[in-house]
Amino acid sequence: MVSHELKTPITSLKAYLQVLQRMAVKEENLMQQNTLEKSLKQVDNMAAMINGFLNVSRLDSGQMHIEKKPFDFQLFFSEIEDEVLSVIHTHKFIFNTYGPLLVSADREKISHVIHNLIGNAVKYSPIGTAVTAEYSVTDDHHLKISVTDQGQGIAEEDRERIFERYYRAKDIQSTSIAGFGIGLYLCKEIIELHHGRIEVQSSPDQGSVFSFVLPLDGETFNL
Ligand code: ADP
Image (cartoon, rainbow, N blue to C red; front, side, top):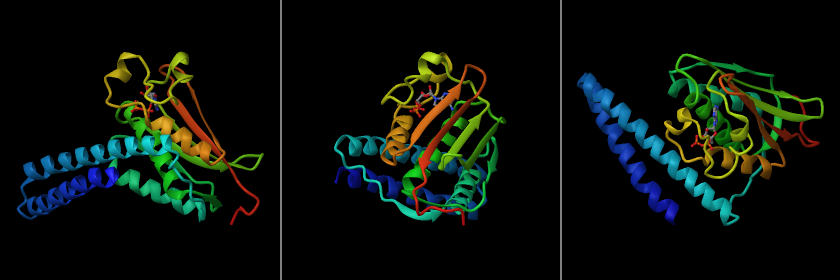
């Protein structure tokens, strides 16, 4: 119920802003178009934050359920690429595909994890740098997804703790960037509910590689 109460006004606000945006486009009012685009981005940020906290409370009350269904990972990955390219214009994106692969997982939640890792890669690296996303199958039959950035990197003492709830790195760069420290905590829980594992390789100023593996069950095969 709380979830519904929180989401309804945001959905309406977004719809009203989109109406205004269409009017501004028709009237060729660039200043209004610009302001409305920024407003819509902020509404999306707010929706993402609310979703994050709702997911934390779902986890706490044991109500985060994984619904596994088979899907083609290549198609799914290219949809994520399209979504990212249409929304984020500040970085160079490289999406390396491994080819068609049938996997059984909770599509929406895995999408959430990948978007989160890409969002962080963008947030914690300079404008214009590259962000690479790729997937492959490991020798021990796991699906491995990695997101690599050329950003500020993570110090060892933070690296051990960033998957904890509400934990944020202590350096000046990180504390000046908005966030609550719940994104990676949710990613870890989602991956562990899939019996997978998430990890990071990084050092300060050397960029970061976040990767996670998901077990491919017996029915899964390369299409
Ligand atoms: P938030 O970004 O809201 O703080 P997260 O749980 O997503 O929360 O991340 C936790 C912390 O991990 C961040 O505050 C940041 O210090 C660090 N972090 C996450 N992703 C990256 C990255 N790609 N590069 C550098 N630091 C990162």
